[in-house]
Image (cartoon, rainbow, N blue to C red; front, side, top):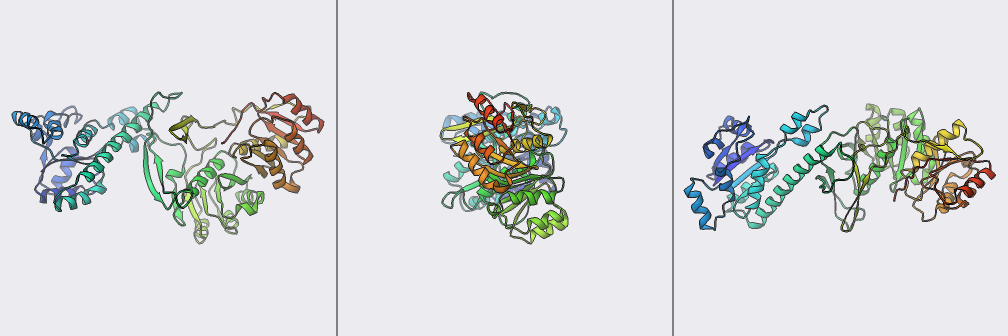
Length: 513
């Protein structure tokens, strides 16, 4: 057996190489891999000796040679291939173990230069991997150190069956495809619009007990973006306590973190079934939590809590009074963490949270449909981009405008048709996911109850009829914010004027299906 070992990640390398030598393998290697094996006293030959040609261009060209690729790609059952190898003094290569330069890790560092990024684009490695994977019935290809020991066990047991060879080849092609995808994404990150061709690189972080329902299998994958993220995300969050996360936990944690991160003031969100059932901003985080809980203390039970500020002891004490499935925040004070860890609570630290949403402006939002994906820009509208325009006889007061903007931001994260009633930067009631907008208004008013009078209302899209506004006015709502744009806008405005309500148009819609 002849093998080529050339790896950046040297985990398990020495033991793997020693196992191959014990099986009679002749190993050739390059650069750092060769040095590591020499230091471990593993018999090793150089690629240059195999090719008869030195490494050139600072190591950029070393394995791109017929002596390497001929030995990998030759079909063993084809006499003509074997005779050509003999004529050119090329030996067969039976195993290729390669993993690639750390491109994703490199470009994720703050301040990485173009030269650094380009130097971490591997050329020879992917070429050898693809060649070996193409010829997998005859050549073993290994890209993951986790496969070293199982492969050695099979070789010691008499050989590697076709199915395992195919599995390793599939894994190898996917490894290269993900690598190339990350590079393409990095080179595309400052381009506008949608590319003609696009792939998405995903890496499994862990399996889940099940999906949305127990009969569905599930796993959590994180995107390999090829760029540094400006803020935290659920994929990179650190779990500090509690049971393993479920499929539904991750969905709700992502929604919760996205809502909290969209506010600049200290803010707490309580999420249930991907919708906020409580939301409040306040200079004191513990008070923000109390107000968020007051939005719907019944629905909050078993939900998800998110804060956009570190959790202090006072806030932790308040949170500990109610049962939640999980909590996510940038970080936790030591005493607060100790208190929360005594609860049956999944605790996640997400790092920095960035106002105007967690994703970068050039990220895309994907939605799966049968047969394909829908892609769109992330729904990001910064405070400086929003230009609310009063359209009624009565102008909103400063306090009303503050609450209108709070409610408008909250509505962005509620399933359409979305209605939010708020007061003093606290969500009092919401209606979500209803086919009829007026029913969403009814639900929001019912939830707000006696606190609705004097509040404001936000609608994620225009009112097609005046009935929703009239219902809100009768419930005591004093001001409304909505996109406008209905053919009945004048009728809706007239209704607001009749009840001396203030109404503001944004010209921006926030559907969330």
